Length: 420
Image (cartoon, rainbow, N blue to C red; front, side, top):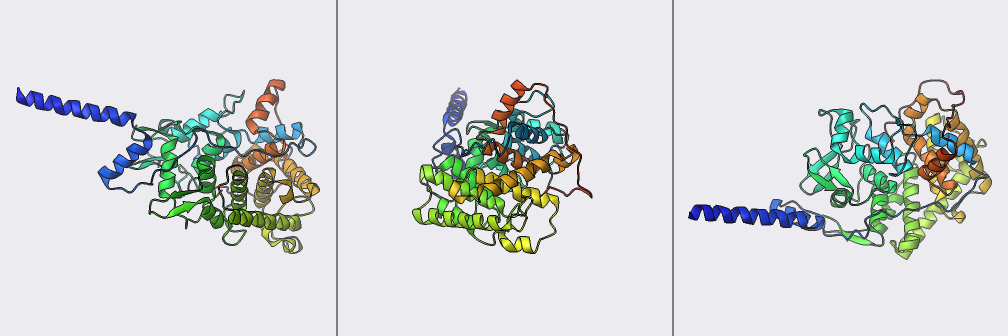
């Protein structure tokens, strides 16, 4: 009888603990996990919102990008992919451009919610990759990790997936289903990113974006090693080193810096001194792209060389020209006018990139999708809208719309886009 009472009490205690644990906050669960396992966990950082901030366009220029031209470009970059072995890198770029609310009349085109589910639900991921592939999501004792590296089933860059779903508008409370069948939320992904970030990483572009959109107006927080982290340090890290170095000829660093500067205008996340440094750095980039633009409107991969890039041209592949031109148009769309080249140069870049995208065959689009998605986003921003919003209105007015790509004027084999 005493044994029955003893075990009954134990069961009741365990049940009470399990119930209390289920009601605890994510931060409390992380603290308990750290105490039980001895695993260091990032100190409590307030995430002041459940929906991420958004840095929107400052312009609407139909004389630069017409409705017809924008529709043609967005048609080209619809997320219509082969479902077997679907690379997360493609989906990350697509959801970043189109957002979680994107919808399409064509059932073979992935909606925003379908893309979100592919990235955040391991069960959906397995339907594409099978059980033997390296998973995208990792169940860690401290939270949810995102596997990245060279494997085609993984993300390509550290914190890239997090930054992309954040820009896409995914909620902090969005469920995340792990390979272990444990259900977490995007908050666990954010907190794990805070825990495992190191300032000396090779690529900090996407971490800076994700942290800015979730943490502002927080300026500083404590890293897992006890050191103080701040947006000042992140901005200075992005400005360090040779301008062309970094993914996509250094243009991602420029976009991330512009995003942090815009967030600072509304949320004061940078010190006055560092904000001035960022502005000066972006002014230098402006001056370099004024000098390095080619007569036809494109920017080269070595845009950082200014006039010398034009006088001593590099043998750039089309891929490199699209990357540089599309990415520069993207950050300029969220930049104040004083950081712009003359408007005629921006117009020439838009005309060049629209013509190039219209001439892309379906095979070329799929090979270059990652950086072509930036073009779709950039041109939408220049129209003061988003791809999803514009496309929803366009579909309602043109339900039978279909764009036929113009004959390709390129020769030779396509270049790989795996590293973007």
